[in-house]
Image (cartoon, rainbow, N blue to C red; front, side, top):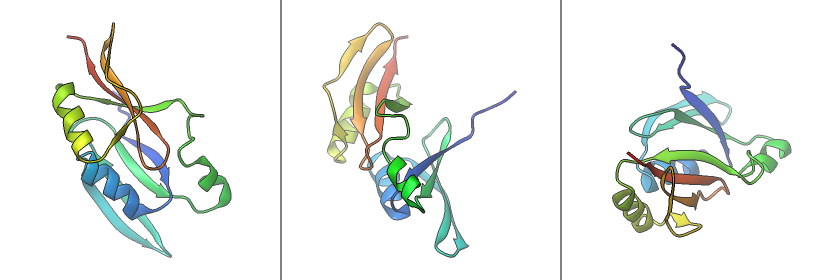
Length: 127
């Protein structure tokens, strides 16, 4: 059995990434290891699913990819079992939703943005 365990997300700064994903979204900071020379191994994780490795952009090409790793499309899908509660918690934490919640054949969804320009779907699938 294979599992998608970790996904790299390029950010401008480790601490800014931690501040959003841990403090606003409620992800757990599972690892923050100093690798020397200003590099760190920083991993955040939701309650279930793949973890995010926050990788600080080191050159111009990586800085240009911040927030545009999928060409402007929704990059990540954060599933919840209580859309209303999660949406309210995120809104109270200052998360910016780019649209009002909507009902689709597959569930309730709303797009939000992280401070780095990535687009996320908050989704509660239909039962």
